[in-house]
Amino acid sequence: MGFDSNTDRAKKFTRRAFVIGAGQGLLLSVLGGRLAWLQVAQGEKYKSLAENNRINVKMLAPSRGHILDRFGEVLATNEQDFRVVVVPEQTDDLESALRQLQKLISLDEKNIKKILKEAGKQAKFIPLEIKNNLDWEDVAKVEVSLPDLPGMAIDVGEIRHYPLKEATAHLVGYVAAVNKSEIGDDPVLTLPGVRIGKTGIEKACDQKLRGKSGSAEVEVNVAGREVRELQRDQSQQGEHIKLTIDAALQAYVQERLSQERSASAVIMDVHTGAIYALSSHPSFDPNMFTRGMDVQTWEELLSNPGHPLNNKAVAGQYPPGSTFKMVTALAALKYGMINENTIVHCPGHYEYGGDRFHCWKTWGHGPMNLLTALEQSCDTYFYKISTEIGIDRIAEMAHLLGLGSKYDFALKEERPGLMPDKKWKLGHFGDSWRPGETIVASIGQGYIQATPLQLAVMTSRLVNGGYAVEPWIIEAIGNGIQPAKKGEKIGFHKWHLNLVKRGMDRVVNSEKGTALAARIMESNMAMGGKTGTAQVRRISKKQRQEGTKQEDLPWKFRHHALFVGYAPVKDPRYACAVVVEHGGSGSGSAAPVARDLLYQTQKQNPLRVRG
Image 1 (cartoon, rainbow, N blue to C red):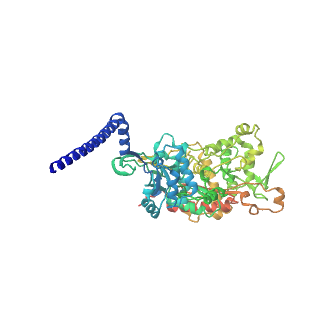
Image 2: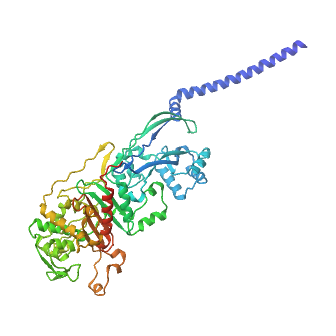
Image 3: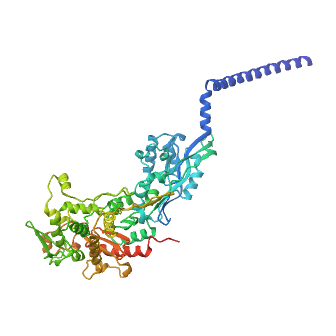
């Protein structure tokens, strides 16, 4: 019995071993076949996939270059920015992932729709920025929940920061998100968080400021998460831009202009053309464009009658009013129509061809020569001499002094103004020029338009000895110094210029000068200049008889107030142009502003060497 029992157990073991062995053999055969299939038939495919899954190459956005004032003070820099991004191809349902994120941080419907729209327009492997400027609490919430947020990650980048805020908004400009039409062939512009210059120096020097992208090879796991960085080719920061601006003076000018409802000003070096301050009010905080603003704030900016988004210092075009009288005077002197002793009687108006042209002083100034006409801003004097000069000669002089055309200037928002002549009118209206239009143009009215920048240049050329200085604002790009353009001699007679300067001196510093109340009391800082009032809407004869005054009109219909000045009188160094929109008279509104600006400029002295 024992023998038979042992024999049965041996047979059962042999059968079981055979079955198990056969099963193992079959399994090995299947596995071997599958491995052969994967290695031979599908080898190249999976080799490629494995490599792509194992190593990702990502682009590294460059750090944007800084913008500095003439002393190295920062006007635009970068701050650390935490943002949440998503790679669409790494999530099966992007909208569901965004909804999950919405439970953790503030994310409005408009933003979600925008992300979904962008994801449908570009390659799925390109990261999309969902929200930037996250605080630590939001970062922590997202980091903890990343396993439930497929395709999303916290990215640390940079955000543009403007320390002086409103003071440099129009000058420095701002950066904002890249539009599809702006991407071009630069792949770095597709990276989340990348911003480009939209206005001001940020726009003018965008390519220099942008820098060069780098790259990094990172190992990722099967879920697409980074394991380690294998290699890095560091990005190159953009070049720093150094401006001629004095940050302290710029801030002062902006603060002074803010006391008016709407105004602009330019301060420049009369010899080199360097711009020390260039301001427009009302302004805005450019940081809103990098950190985001709500709809209400945007609508308020658009609806503000002072047009805060416009750089009025270079793009505001105004009739120059009586600040133009020096142009008419120089043209008359050049062509021998007048001299220092030429007298014109002012009864309060000028009759020509049956029309009456009024002087601002209703009862008249009496007998006027050039100096007294400038000093007291007599309109009749310039009406009379303009009919002898003609518009073409006046226009010629205006162009020599820098009016009516754009400069090769850094700010792209600059506009050219307008200096009309006979050819211009015929080409634009198909009509001939009339003598009455010359009379109106002689005091800076009619078709003439000038920017504050142009008026500052005009003043500089008048007081620097007659050199065609041009404005410039970029002092250095990286290590490359930008040389100032030395103006050529225009060809004015020295005594003509001195005569006009004497008149401008008397405007401010003589007992009958229209800007006497705004003079600088310190003799070594005394300024010269010229007031101007630019008509916006003419007061009718009926309104005049009823006693209607400028202050009785709605703000938008009141005259613009202008002043152009220079200082010091004895050795001019700084020129200033101020426009107070709808400010009334130049003597009452613009001249006090210019006085404060020229006084402060001399006190701060942008030419100093800062310790």
